[in-house]
Length: 486
Image (cartoon, rainbow, N blue to C red; front, top):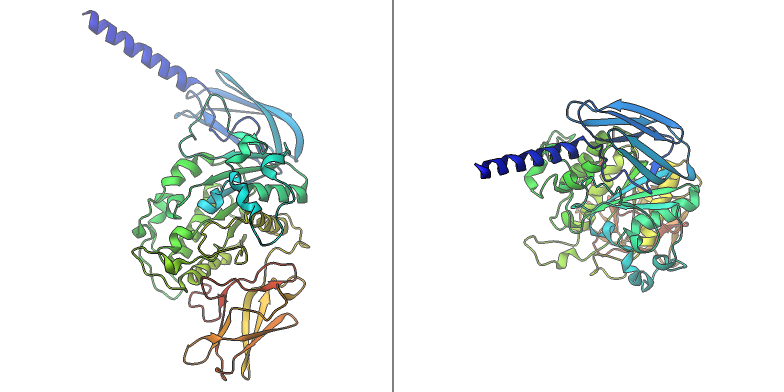
């Protein structure tokens, strides 16, 4: 009898504790001290409480109230605010009261992907050993001291709500050590351009394919191409669909963002993917935009670097053209609105290194895109030359480019490299390439009647062809079979 009473008492205490925990107002991990809220947009604030509990949120002179629904969920939207360097407090009051401190208003970006996006600032020594380009003038890992750049490191096992409301930090000292180098340098350069607080959220997992970043239900589509052919359902490729979406992306929604940065693809390239990856990237972009209820949400991504995939000893045989085909697939996403791509073919010291160390330059180039595309600074040149069209003139091919900046150039003043042409037989041979104004003229004695041209069509290609602003030309082939499928 005593044992039954003891069990009953224990269960009663457990139920009371559980009810008390549920009745407390709770916030998702992304809402916490030191965060940055997106300026000039409605800002969602949300969480859980007891069903029917009245919730009041106060911030920057605003007061919003709501009532938790039958499942205990609640949300309010703060009216758009201007950027502010003034640290302010947010009060969320229900049965209990939560006070969040040191909050700024500015620009918020999410950076995601695999290891090259995750590549942390603690690897700064590798930056210092880089031999190309201009290294950062100072050791940011030890000298960074801008409290107006805030960072949130999304760790997949630690995204549950916590009573401490910690997660955001200033990009100073120890918190910066584990943060994405690309994300930090993007924020640093963007801050210099905009002079408003910058908030960066990093959600990246080394070695991850694209599938885990897409909600599993969105992978059950069979892409239909414009030529009428239907591909197998995307989920047929495996890759743990939704694994990181569920644990790292969904907990961030609907935290208001200005845009998204994406640096991923190596794991899918090892699988020799091309057009299927293009549709997966399209699915990710469109589904994330749907999740954030923003069809125009900027999405800027990095074209992966040259690497010796053909030397990989795995179950698939690779050729030197698998990577260029993947580059081509990545570039197809540019047919979606409000997307842009950063080329980094010049930022590699060795094609045996899957993780080149020039992360400060990758971040800077992404900031150029943001400045031009997202913030309307049209005087900022943000991309290298991109293939537009060809014209066959006698025994030569005349190539026209977009994004030429102030002109075309050779990085080392030597003849342009990695151009090839072919005639009706489809056999490509190295070609002479000359700059004539804003065009490139290519020819080869072996091909008197050229039909097609390729540039950088090799996994090792690190051409000297750039814009006068120093940005590399994007690899292409004029005989692209997948052009404009979206």
